[in-house]
Length: 151
Image 1 (cartoon, one colour):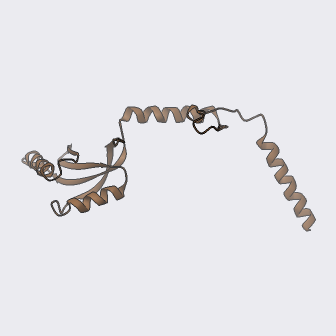
Image 2 (cartoon, rainbow, N blue to C red):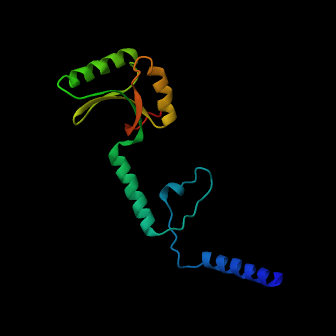
Image 3 (cartoon, helix red, strand yellow):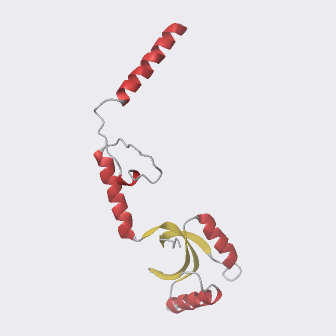
């Protein structure tokens, strides 16, 4: 019985190795993998459709000029005086934290003030703790954020 299992195992391994070397798979290289920065080469075997979809995804993201991230909402209200109150809240925030980004946003029927461009929720939590004394009703929301400055 053990001999039969060993033979079956060897046949399966052998057939898998033959399949992986078949000529039916078309070879293609992603251009970003072809550079010799680390004196190596990567060979990518894939369908042409994968490269097409990947390139369309890159083009879409380049046009967006933003990415998924987090911001902190410090103000939200509707009504006749909501716009003026939102502007006042934004000015109050900028007096306390002049180095931070702030955004006045209108999502019908609410005026909102969102602050920060955080890639991770932990970054947003750190800043939320910093501002929570001045803005106790602030909370984290998911939003499309500007690409962070990498300098």
